[in-house]
Image 1: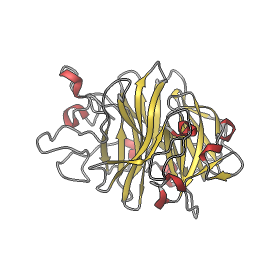
Image 2: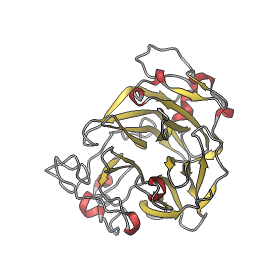
Image 3: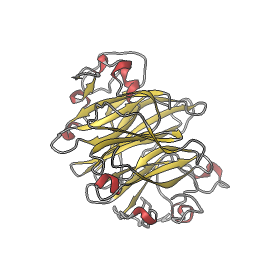
Length: 344
């Protein structure tokens, strides 16, 4: 889907030769927005035209023949990418990072959602990339866009600072709680049917932590004091009460996405590094099923699977689940189709 040899030809059209993730969500009007991680352009240019993250848009909701990213048009808030008139083939950065190792090397989107006509992205501030599957974060936070992803404003009050201490701070200050570490990466899903909550699945930085669950009313997404957390048997407003046994998935979980599947009549969660796996549950709290393999280990080395919101398996029109997945081989994103079993 991305790269110089992709059908979208993202190098010529958006100056993207390599990227990953492709966190996907519906913007509330049927268009799919996709947030990508560290993105590079022409590698023979100093700095390789590195951007911490970029956004693309698509109106393509028939994914059986692939996913087409629309052209970028300067000033057009519904075009395929955010580009400027002086560089119409250069996708601009969403959320800037300092780009300094051991300070803030990058800022990576991990989840996106549309609420009340606004777009929200949860991102992590990465301090340092370690060995494979290991990285350190400064904090996670939410950025907001009121113009369909054209401009983004990080909200400092939503920062969950990743420090091994708990300190009481004024209500308007970022939270400083030891359990912030459990929500450095995220996935968002709206409650099904009459359920009024939005659920946030959180994991620690890296690929070696359990998955935890928070919920909030849509109007409260920027007010962490209104969030509730699942303890394993009950909800609490006290983040400090979380412990390892509060996890909804107690195995190691990587970058993930979560959605409601009309086809299965269940919540579905996918994650994986090398192999891609799927779990199902009747409620966000679980119990979550044992994982089923969608892409076996070694078939194509993939990570960071992000479900596309107009997949038939999610809308209920068929068994096909489509997701973006990042390839180790050439650092680009491919579209994957998996047909779900209605008996799962």
